[in-house]
Image (cartoon, rainbow over all chains, first blue to last red):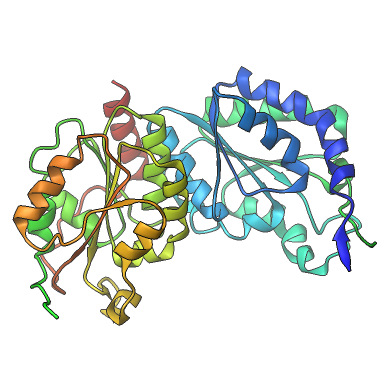
Length: 184
Length: 192
């Protein structure tokens, strides 16, 4: 039977830089974090859930998160969406809400189907995430190396809220580690 | 089985918005947006012109950001059906200041009156109840609509009411389509 073995490894990798990201959320006054989960985000999601100053909410689909954070902004809250690359495809029409209203929007996206992917069903979105986001009006930053995490995310959050832009930060598969399924 | 006469959507919305106090209103695309504009344009209305399926989750984010202000979604059955999953999120978060009113005409009124699933038996009140929302049944006359409008301010949500309305096309009353204007106007009104 196939069983997911590697999430532990991914969580170990992601814990190192998720602490830095978590501190940046406070620096930039993020009040609502919405997500559709991914192993690569799990440490950060857990940190946010433990933080009573942040509303951390799971969405039934990623497009719901786009609308949710638009409403949060209309009510004065800054938000952040966490998703994986496959989720970008679920959002495309809803992105018109943030571009047409020019609502500041930030999403951190863990990449699948990009680098040594074992699951072919992830490849289509993984290979097209950057282009789809660009076509949808996003400024896209990509992080390949752990040492770039803090600076890139800090800059992305500042750009989003100071310049009223949609920002996507892609956390590459080289950064988060490949997900592998092995026979047990 | 008793079937009640469907209501007129403009009368329902006019009744709901007769005394808005500090009510924040989010309208779903299409007729619901025109209905809210027809009841009187208001800086505390946020009209959707697209983003189908987005009215409920947008209102949830707003309700969480502004927990002391009542938030009302007015939308159609088509918009709600496109984002049904959002009802599960609303139920899980259970914001007391959120109410969702669906004007259910059982058709996609903007695109040629094709039937929605509610025309074939889908019961939106039953779905909302299964998502742990507080459902107000039997809103089948304007007196009941008036009662519903008074519950919006009690902080006893999340409230949900599906109201059957006529398949009619009232005159189009169009608010601004300028998203940046609508956003800034609404946000200024909320945060002032």
